[in-house]
Length: 157
Image (cartoon, rainbow, N blue to C red; front, side):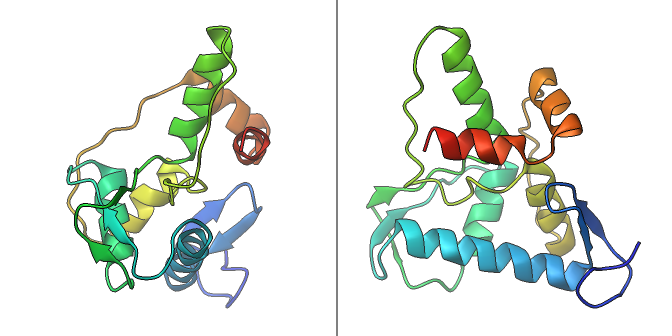
């Protein structure tokens, strides 16, 4: 398949968009979407505290934050929660009979799927530890309706 932007060989298929992207345009899309999340949730120069773990989302978060205009010291904690983890937390709360309390303001990776984070890290040669918690219900939902997790998270936002 071909990249829908430039026509080069597609490297990753994004099912919720229904499009293939080459490596160059995938990296550009990741950085652009992450930058818009940062502008939405944080102010320039704000003190942020990044997670220090070696799991995939934490490594990707630190890589995407490189060169951004923030102070990295003791400050507002930034969480490395990604789309499937947030959706899993929402569904777990609902199954327990609780209404989920969701705040996205400290989760700049909220609209990235685990598969995208993994592909990003592999492209850049980042070393990480796997942390994906498999949830068959979420995988079935994504298989039949790729954009459903985005809708679920936005509904509880």
